[in-house]
View 1: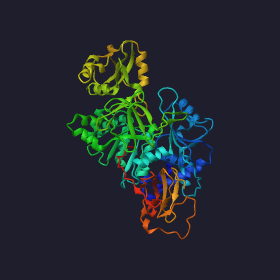
View 2: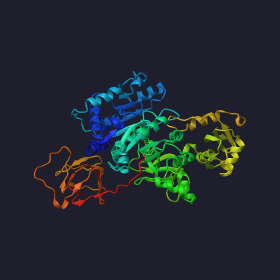
View 3: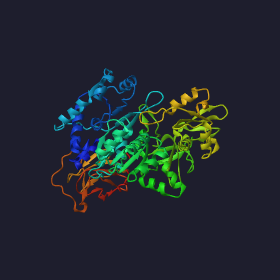
View 4: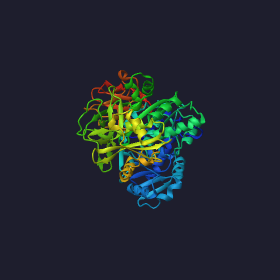
Length: 504
Length: 102
């Protein structure tokens, strides 16, 4: 099934409803469909395999997604924040291609062989000007819908393949067609080169919810837009939420129109979600877990799960606030050991998933198995009621003297210390134990290593107490708030001398 | 009738259109209003009418399934006439309401 059909259906059923943009100037569903067809006709006149997007969030993103879909050409959004050299190298890999590029970024990517550049302003203007014309678009068999280049902290980025059938299956099985109430509006602030930026467009359109794009995230701009546009739904990554809460508290803003706030894309520190639940008691919080290779969400912790976890006396229910909820209906999910064997309930292993939305494929490389099961490389476990707890990437698990130790739980313990502003726990090579537990800590008030070790000792088993605590001014993150563990690991491994002296 | 995933079919007796989401496990004829559905480019033959036994409507955005063969079709344009395969009525798949996560 074709993703363009999602918009075609919405245009048919909801023609005059606002689809995209600020309420004062929103384009309707019928208008967006007409513009997408016009944009497809324009792009179709240029010989190209791929439709690239380089720029901030804007109306050009949905236009380019649906136009490339109509043409049967993969949509490839690139990260404009990459250094020029890396961006140009990535762009060259998409040739022959046509690239819709923000006007002020065209100079950065000019002259790449086999790539035709269309400035965004021209792309949008032409789509609008030609929207009223009849466009005869040939029927194409849908295949690859999106190519997403993974952030890849080491080596060249891999291009994850999402086919129309994966994305369409995700949308129609998780979203009720035209199910949104009149007046609902979704604020999209994740960048267009992130899977959530793509899925937000598709699910918003199919559900009948107006999409408002934040061109680039700042917490102030997010809160301004949420207030002005009477935003009812939004998705954020954990680092965004913490910064949004700072602004809400400073302004004493309560966001009365906000109905649902989902978060995902990384581990949510319990202290941040607790703060959010206190600050925004009227909001339905949803924790969504998924990967690029799974067409976005595969597991959700629902609003009632959040409430139950906060009010229950049962520790097993309370700790579910730190889970990613239960798998979507229609998906199969299993925890398996290193040989691919199922592990007993409650034990940690690799998360495997199977279902129609799962791609598990890259250009030139396939990780999904012939039987449809995809190993996520995430480490996790299921509780008695089937709630999934994600411990992090399998590669990040610390193996100390044969014991598997997940950094997340130690990080959570340290984060509850009043002096700790941020923390990352990693394994460093150790002659005696294979690996030893190292915590890299950013403090907000002075603390010494022994005090922090004692803090962990009071909360976790002794083997989980960091043998080494290092102090830093800040931790390395990528632009969507993912901790760059490999960068940090390289730093601590190359730093030979112990740094306890810095603790004071 | 090759009901492959993604293929689109239009009613011979109304404006209804469907898209196949999941193919049937065995060959079947997909009908609307009791009359075999047509390829999107086919002409609607004159003189056909909805079989009263298959009156009703195909509702936009609903997913219809045949329990026997696993066929699933999404209604992409609404219209008169209920959907069936080999005369067996399709049933609406329960929408599993999920909280918005994007």
